[in-house]
Amino acid sequence: MAHDQDQAHPSEATYFKVFASLMMLTVVTVLVSRVHLGAVGNIVVGMAIATVKASMVALIFMHLWYEVGKWKIVMLVPPCILFAVIVFALTPDVAYKPTHAAPLAAESHAADAGHEADAGAGH
Image 1: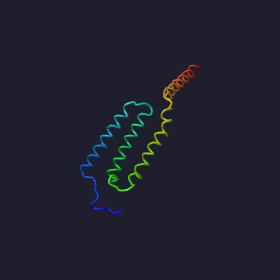
Image 2: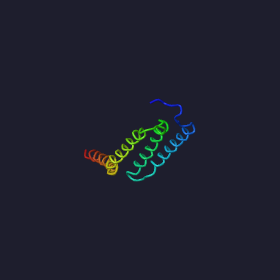
Image 3: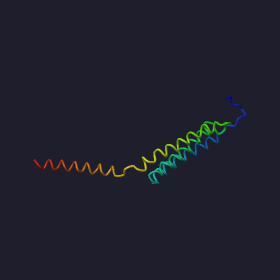
Image 4: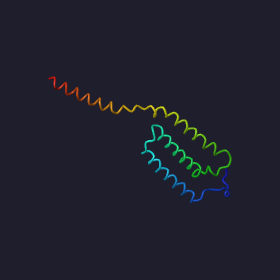
């Protein structure tokens, strides 16, 4: 596809606005990760923010916003579908993660230490 000089492109101000938005969304992602939103909530919010950021990069920096035709749909729909698939595929793993694994490991180490002490006392 030949690029016409008349075709609209983002200005430097637009690039700086998108950059500032990306930095702001990165800070929001970090702050939200420190808030407990449930087993699935943090992942959904994080993936939603990542999808918005990826869309901004694709639309502005890759000039998809200014494309004519169906390229916008071709480039934006698959990542959105992938987002939904990943969220639904990971939901069971995250939602049903055993929370008692760490205490059991600590109890196991304490029990091993107790057996060693018993074995030493028997001599």
